Length: 124
Image (cartoon, rainbow, N blue to C red; front, side):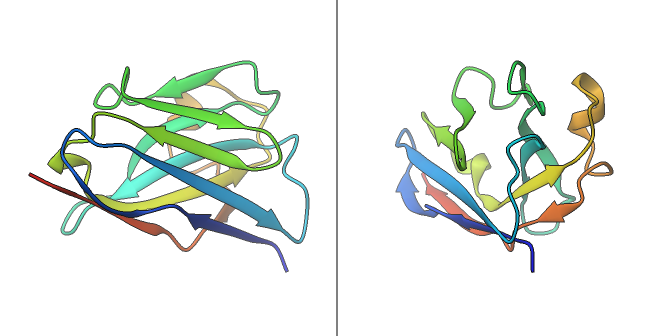
């Protein structure tokens, strides 16, 4: 069974940092596009960051650009710095077999696999 499992969430004060991890089991995602999405209470799931299948390009939502960094090796990571209360949400990692890039990766549609999510809470 294919699974993505996120970890690293928690409670942090505004201005602090967290590092999220996403580990895969059941198959390798080395040639998959990977992404982070988040969903705050009462809001729709939104794109945070993505890396294309070959790992040559990364993409960020404007709201996190310059503060968050997505990276991958055998797992997927999201380094989150200068956190703000509006970053509070459940964060999900996702994997897609698409060879597409750019705006296509900002939509949840191409993603075949999703993790269960990890809660990030930023206090003011």
